[in-house]
Amino acid sequence: MAVRRVVPNVQSEAVQENREFYGLLGFEEVMNHGWIMTLASPSHPTAQVSFMAGDKTAPVTPDMSVEVDDVDAAYAVMRERGAEIVHPLQDEEWGVRRFFVRDPSGRVVNVLGHR
Image 1 (cartoon, one colour):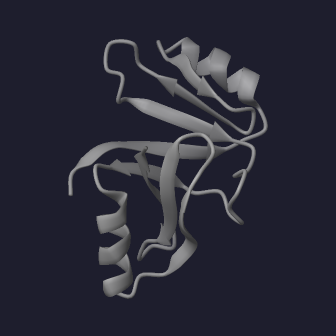
Image 2 (cartoon, rainbow, N blue to C red):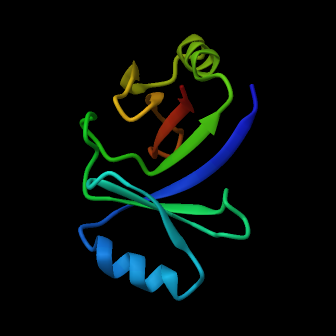
């Protein structure tokens, strides 16, 4: 299993303000679903930050997202190790397959793969 990118998720209602602020640092909007907006560096597209008002289908807002090349394998490993699954593995309408798991520090991690 390989990690493709890691993105911090900031819970915020100030989407426009964050777009403008981080734009001053060179970030550009690359995704906006209304409830989540992702900004990325044009020169290094995997350098990203997301702002979320709240997660659309999960009971909690994750602290970070980790995109992997095999989300099913990641889910199996986490279950085998007894990690706390916060949100079950499922396909989402916006083209990702994901689950949430709690890390040892209590942070919620959105583990995903694109379909």
